[in-house]
Picture: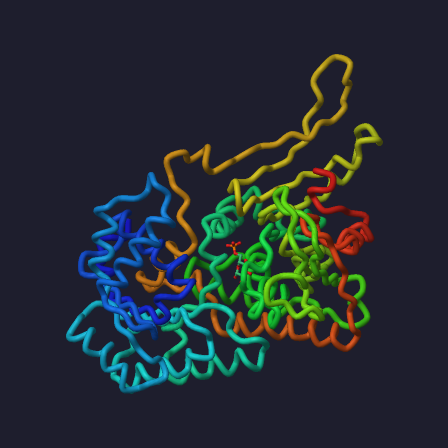
Length: 493
Ligand code: BG6
């Protein structure tokens, strides 16, 4: 347990009445409070542009939290304890003189100062400068920022430069909330604590890898933002590439933030650029049209509220990614992500190569390889598909695939799986950066993604339609069957 050290902090949330803070941050803080992880001295300063008093904001937060927290996790006592820590101030983020309120609130506090920028990224720079001018920050201040860090490499550099003007890299905590998910973290344990897997984790033993991050929801009132971004910027540049890095990276020397991030950067640098000559075989862009979701009719992307009917923004993307290094040469990573797919599912499937010499029934040769299925959400856990002999006198040596199953909710029945933001906030309070993205990671990811976007713009990579409630355009099936393989859910093997 880490609570021997005092992690008391003054948490200042810019954009405290926004969607992110209300949906994610305050529920996470509530859970930390309930778990006894918020030290007694910790305080929260909520800042937003809206007029309001501390009492009004506490009432609003209480209402939000009562809705967001499952009934069996709701404790009046913890709720009251959390709200008692919260003070609200109205602040114009661009007005330097307003920041005196932050300095005043800090007073002589010796708590670590954590600044959470739950605002659009174009405000990061000005807030950072105003904090400095108001004398609020020192070398120990930690700053948490959300994606998107820019729209491309150039804009991300601009944002990073503005932050670097005020803070050192070791003060910056760039969130990719996928890194806070319990099962994503577990990838590190799975790979580096089990020699069974680490000894098999390369091109000698693995034939290919699938990464799927599917969502059943559509755009959920975010059309304006999403249409500027698209699925490649919104999901691939960050979450999918982070997953890919955790699967593909070499073993870090230790668990320190830089050891892990150094290894991830090496993977990003080894990604084969998706150049015009391979665009057609390596990339599929899709956009959903009307269809069904959970049994009800839903509109297409172009019919969503606020939509520009001519948009060519992708809501689905599938990529064949190749990593040009010794470990992964010849092992494609098929990755796909989309909105309005049949279900919410994040899953990684590692396909192992078959045994070198096959001696069983030739008809069953397609079965003869192990698979590791890692379910990130929902139903967190993993399944190792192994081959055994089918039982019965009449079965001879016929093979059967069977699962070695680990479902976390069953195996660790009493342990609640914390939400990503709980873990991330907790790690910031401890000052641990290993679950946060370093500047060079963000920039390497943008460099690769920018290349893809520039090439598809140049070639006009066609946008394929798919009906809402399906697994994406037919072309995404061709992307993998062309190599004699199929997506896991199509065959189950
Ligand atoms: C966000 C994207 O970063 O991740 C959203 O902007 C997406 O478009 C969300 O819906 C998915 O997160 P999760 O945790 O629900 O898989």
